[in-house]
Amino acid sequence: MSQTREQPQAAPAQPPQFMGFDVQPVLGVRHWSDRVFSLRVARPPSLRFENGQFVMMGLAVGGKPLVRAYSIANPNYDEHLEFLSIKVPGGPLTSVLKDVRPGDPVLVGRKPTGTLLLTDLRPGRRLYLFATGTGLAPFMGTVADPYTYERFASVVLLHGVRRTSELAYRDVLEQDLRAHPYVGEMARRQLHYVPCVSREDFHTTGRITRFVEGDALSTLGLPPLDPATDRAMLCGSQAMLAQMCALLDQRGFQGFARGGLADYVIERAFTQS
Ligand SMILES: Cc1cc2nc3c(=O)[nH]c(=O)nc-3n(C[C@H](O)[C@H](O)[C@H](O)COP(=O)(O)OP(=O)(O)OC[C@H]3O[C@@H](n4cnc5c(N)ncnc54)[C@H](O)[C@@H]3O)c2cc1C
Image (tube, rainbow, N blue to C red; front, side):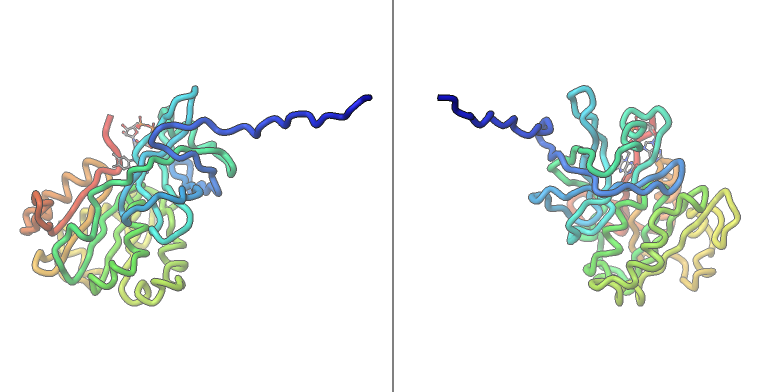
């Protein structure tokens, strides 16, 4: 008697697993310019993070993880993760990562960390967020966090880039965040977003350091920086950080003190080769 047997079903192909990483699908990609793009990734259900932290993120290449540090560019109450990335020509990771498409798997590290935490700052009246390039990423969580607006009466985000096309998330900062159900009202009242472009005509030109050097803050209706009232977070290139820290130190601001609270905290947006 012939019998039709069910053929054993081939198990669906599982993506390879890597210790310390979750393999998550890309949900969307946005190319801001030929130098910068952002990607949205499904959030691992167990991932908890503080706004402003970074994780290791990347791709499996040749069966091995190729990962780099990436700030999480959205608030910790979102159901997804967002990353803002540079495209380094010939860069081991980003020359491949820039071509990912929705559905592609990326690796997301399980240990968020970082130094750009509100809880490390002394109380103050005004919070300055100084960012250059992809250094904006960690502040996208900070400016969408209701706690930021509870702690500071006003929040001034200065983002310096070379060209207007590199002003990533400008639409979010100028519109979406101000209409946001959790923080919209606070952002409308308390957030001051100052995009600065150094190599093209724009309404705010030059480097962001000029806002600390002279009295350029007065053009924004703000008093000069004062350690009695102001706190700062900085993220960007090594050169920008060195210059800004020197300027803040000259004005009496205290950087991260071991075990204590600081007037300003910093994080390098990348390491120089
Ligand atoms: C704490 C921390 C957080 C970071 N967060 C981000 C982030 O949110 N977004 C992001 O794009 N990168 C971020 N980086 C840099 C990131 O880790 C990688 O260096 C970057 O993705 C390039 O990887 P790569 O393998 O293509 O080239 P790499 O070999 O890593 O870098 C090659 C060279 O490219 C330059 N470079 C690297 N990253 C940048 C950058 N972001 N902007 C300008 N020049 C750069 C440097 O000169 C570097 O030596 C962060 C780095 C650190 C240490």
